[in-house]
Amino acid sequence: MAAYPKFRVSYAAESVPHKDARNSYDAQLDCTKGRDFKVLRKTFGIAAGLTAILGLATQASADEITITADQWCPYNCEPGSDAPGYVVELAKRIYESEGHTIKYVNNPWQRALKMGARGKVNGVIAVSFQPETEQMVLPEEPLTSYEIKAVTDADDGWSYDGIESIGERTVAVVAGYNYGDRFMEWQRSNEGQQVVNQGDGALQRNLKMVASGRADFAIDGANVLGYNIDQMGMKESFRFAGTIGEAVPLYLGFSMKAGNAEEYARLWTEGVRRMRESGELQEVLDKYGVSDWAE
Image (cartoon, rainbow, N blue to C red; front, top):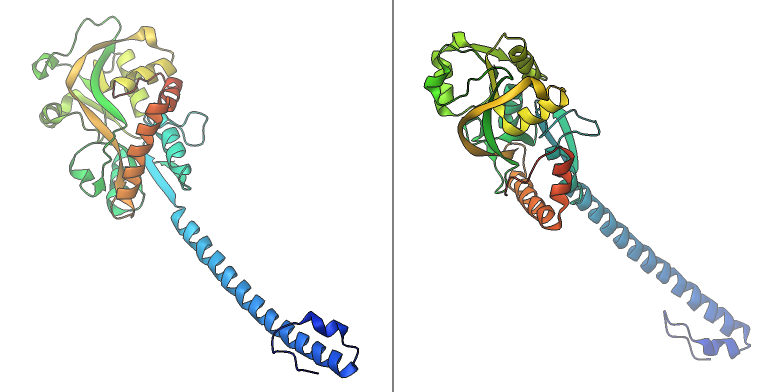
């Protein structure tokens, strides 16, 4: 009986009744099975290794992106609520579609800027081109066109018409906010004509001070004033009284020190523009009574 080739199973052996021949076949089959098992085990090991590597790659690319600011509705409102702000909602849709998660937390504005500069958070909501954002990457696509407005009591006939028009009036402002170079220059020289609030609810406190006569006017972004006055149920208590400076873009700024800033900025720009084309952007903005800043 011819010997069976090593590691090859020949079904011709099934027709050979000789015990030795069958034993020889079984021995060869056992040997073959042993090698097949080793090959299978090796193949399985390689596959498992590749799966683990791919899993690690997926895990590494799935980031938790932390964004922060003080509450400034309608851009960013109460964390965890049904209406966390349209910037937060847009960020969730954009980054979660890329496999990331968004963590939104509130911090006083000055602290938020410092955290961004030091890399303690990934992004700061509603920043402009200013010294505090030199360590941030700002996307091509902003999150709003920021126009500063003055509001007075509904019965006050005064309107802002340049710095000289302020006269002896008292203004309610939020600590750390940038109201434009010209107005901030006036602030530095007229500290006694300012009421300053800070932290969450600062704007609402400013508006209440105007309504109660403790300040003559308050200033903030047009969208922010309109949204908060509406939420406070005080539409009849205030009137818009002029524009301060020119409209400027605000951004979701990404910290260079926190890493991946350019990638996050790119994803924001591409995501907003994609949502604008599909109509999804305006759907989110409608929830907050805001128009697309590109219009």
